Each structure stands twice: as C-alpha cells, then as structure tokens.
Length: 246
Image 1 (tube, rainbow, N blue to C red):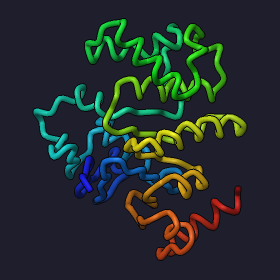
Image 2 (image 1 turned 180 degrees about the horizontal axis):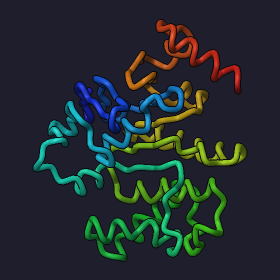
Image 3 (image 1 turned 120 degrees about the horizontal axis):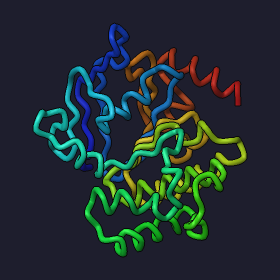
Image 4 (image 1 turned 30 degrees about the vertical axis):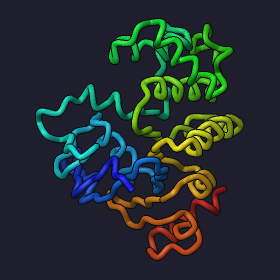
C-alpha cells in the first residue's frame, strides 16, 4: 500500500497543556481511518495539525513523501490537497449553494467560472443537493448544510478528505443523511480520515480505527478488533461508556 500521510513523533502544546504526545501513525491511499476517543483526547487537534490549521511543536508530517512542516512548504497549496469538513459547516452565508462550491475553485485553483460550476454540480449531485443550488445557507437544514460543505470540499478534488466530527452539530434525524453520503464516498475509494462519535459508522465503514486518549494513540486496529476484542483497558472503558449511552 502507498502511504499518503505518515505522522512521526508529532507533538502539540497550547501553553503548558500538552494536547498531542509522540503521535505516530500513517494513512494509506484509499484507506478510511476513523479516530475515536473522549472529548479533549486530541482528536480534532491532530486533524487540524495535518491540515496546518495548527502548527505542531515537534515531529514530522510526511505527505506524499514530503515533510509539510519544513519552512519552505506552501501551506495554502497543501490545504487544497486536503479537503476539510468541520463541525460547524463554515459556509459563506451571503453566497448561494453553488457559489459556496465554486469560489474556492476559482480563487485558489484558478479554474474558470464555467469549469468550477461543472465540477460543483457533479459533487452537489453526489451529495444529493443539486436542486438547492440557488438556496442560501440560512434556508437549509443542518444536514443539508453539511452535505453542501462536503460537496464544497470535494469540488477542490483533494487527495484526502478530513472530517472533524461532521455530525456532532446535527439533530439526530439529520445524522443519517450525512453518514450515508460519507459511506458512499468511502465505498468510492476516497482516502478519508474521520474524527467521529458515531461508533456504528466507525465499525461499519472504516478500514482501521484509532483510539486516542489523553493526547496519545492508546490503540489502533481493524474495526472488529477494536470493537469486539480491544486489548487496552482504556479502550474497553471508553467503549463500555459510549455504547451504554447509545
């Protein structure tokens, strides 16, 4: 398998608070990796470091065989290769759905308006939002906004999609529609790194599950191993607590 992201000895602190400690793991091309763990375990910070929204204090992030933490690395170009879907959608409220999905393509990738619209329509169809192209975000439900956010990220045609708890701001009845889109993307062979509280999704869709606890990777493995026979006490406790809540 070809490694697309390889993280080596990564650390990140905010002041005296050490959020990530000596993180080592990699993602292969076409792999779907779900990161699970309690709030505050460092999951979102890890994702934000990979996208350089946060600057790590130490270690390496090798992306396509190049350490992106080297000083000469172009952050903006790097971000075009990694699509990011946030908890809070982060759509432009003053633009309609179509414009939300074309503006990055035109401004950042230099595509023509016509080409950008064609690509945006392709991905809006993928997420089932093509009939809403003239709607503004305020006219959409949370689930619809998140599907537009996914289409917007896909329109940049990234190598990897990063999802930071994409369903945590949604009402329960809207979670399913977003997970369905993500499942279809996973089946299409897209490389995905997903921070999630949705254990059913992680178990069903991921190739590998990473369990984080207190800023370290406590355990990782195939979904059936992590969910059915975890080896670490911390993993067992977390799953027992989470699965009891469901």
